[in-house]
Image 1: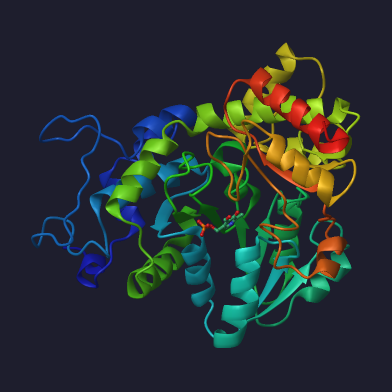
Image 2: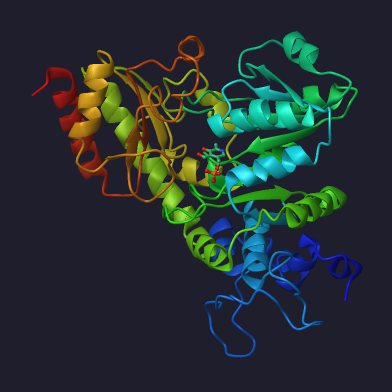
Length: 432
Ligand SMILES: Cc1ncc(COP(=O)(O)O)c(C=O)c1O
């Protein structure tokens, strides 16, 4: 038994080793999604792994107690570490939120965080209501998209231990120049870690570890699982962060922020089609964004893949190597400008809350619901739903008005989605 196993936790490097993650790293993204972490069962030959529901394991068999490690969790972690380019270690958690909680716990008391200002609401809540009140952790929220270097550098303190980035931000899809923020963090005297919440783009469109980030975090609940039937989170770290990985895994085991074997099995099944789904999400979202741009009922459309997005060039530069190949092939076949860039769109309907409400109740295929990243299309009103807890003045400052609608574009047939949005816009604005 390894020293790590004796201490009650297994290391991701052991997982990677036992599941052959490293040997398949030269395969393409889709091949890795299907094969890495998913080998036929040596005893039965089963191509799909069985679900290991046992809470405890006979000693010396590689596992001990399911909170500390489980075959399905190891398999999923191996897949995730392989999919997130630049990753070596994967840790799967009970939710995206418990992932955030564990990372912030690892900073110890009285640390300081620099965070993008329109971070996911639950992350904001954890930073300001839990970490601040219980750990003495202070967070400075900075407009990392527009602030100049001096302002960002001035936010760093001697105890700044973490920089928290989300790109694109939610719901206004502002883009952060990750390599630039990493370079500013590297100049800070406290050597903070840089974490990127890559939930919105998924490992298919963006590879923050290749852009210099130390940690990538995901709410697997969204695109990675992709079928709106699992709540889970994950961290992926590069090979030079073995010690940090062990620290996080130790904390995770001690806190008990672990996912069930069944959820891991489902998320791994979902991850096998991530590349197919993300391409379809992207091409559908681009088509819907174009239809919105053409509509007389729309004030403005925010989709970073559109040429009209103010940071469209940064969106292209930020693409992962595999997404860039897909996008370049797409552009060769479709010389109409713009490119697929994930499945999230926000737009402002002409009018206000009334028009937005009518739109949201008139859609046939877009279901009015929070969350995102599933195969089915969803629509929501951030000002009243996901971002309702943000004070109105701050919402206004972030551009989250009563007429801002967020779409999670699914993988249904493109024409059906466009027709649905067009009819709902007509009903929304004209009241017909
Ligand atoms: C960007 C982002 N990060 C983190 C989370 C939290 O994840 P979970 O809901 O799995 O706890 C969410 C959930 O919506 C999210 O959108």
